[in-house]
Image 1: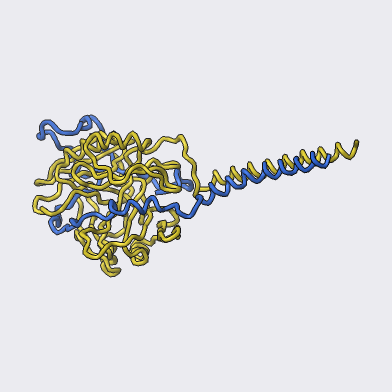
Image 2: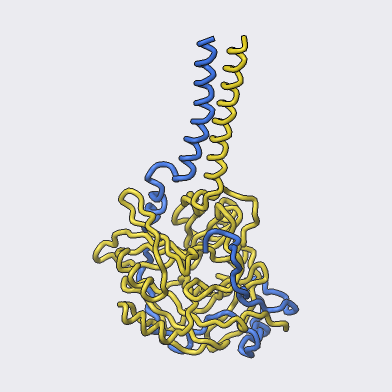
Length: 110
Length: 303
């Protein structure tokens, strides 16, 4: 009976301890080397020189389409064949999302 | 006999309690935001969902972006790696990492755009098939998802990301959050075709202004980015992505950027569709845009 009792206690401890250890690893991201993968990407992050915006001035107009602005008239009719598949002219021109964020985000990040 | 029965019951209760405790801990761990498990939610493919800056001076970068945009930072360093998450009004907006930049290196910091995909391997295959160069193969970013980094056929660097949780919702960016991205490149038509093939974008042509093309990439019926021609006078520039933070007053923000040690690269001016726009750089040289936007601007045009 004593042996039976000890085995059962061991089983109980194991049943509780294994999920606890697993959950602890998941919650804290495991070993402390978690960002090394990103760091190894270093050469790709630093870009070559070439951000001299001096050539732009007032011609730099790249913002999304805004409702009601005539400057948003569709172009392309005189461009002939394009490398991309242009959206059908019947398609409404979309803008960026509207509406403020409600209390809950759909995801945890931006 | 009674004693044996009682002990057996006690043992069963104990096993049950321990199992319950363990399972509860597992459930809590899975619900933790920091350990979001992959879900079957649909990714917002084509949306820029995350930006990262590698900088040689993380403290200086925090002072600059905190002072300019009100961002706050959470320390996420690990080992020798200095890494912080930036938040705007409590919402995560970016990650910044410190990495040494060798003196004399012909390189500079730049914000890296992560574009959402549902399957990194499939998107990688599509990008490579269409001429992209793989800079960093598929890898896992803890608490973020699977990612890979490429240079497109014209050399613009971008990343793809299959989020490990749901992509951020399509809502209007609040001041201090990223609101727009543009790709500046030599051949906008070819670039648009590349990104359309990889991300399935719809492409809209907003018409030329002089020699400058203005194409727009859209997915999910939302504009995601523009593709614009690099000026011919800008012979040394290379193709690159540039993202924009929404601010309430571009002129004031640009001035503030200078005060904080940054530079104004393109002075505040009215965009073709209205609203002010500027390009600035942080003290370490990473460029980014500033854009004003009102809620009324976001409605779609019916042709």
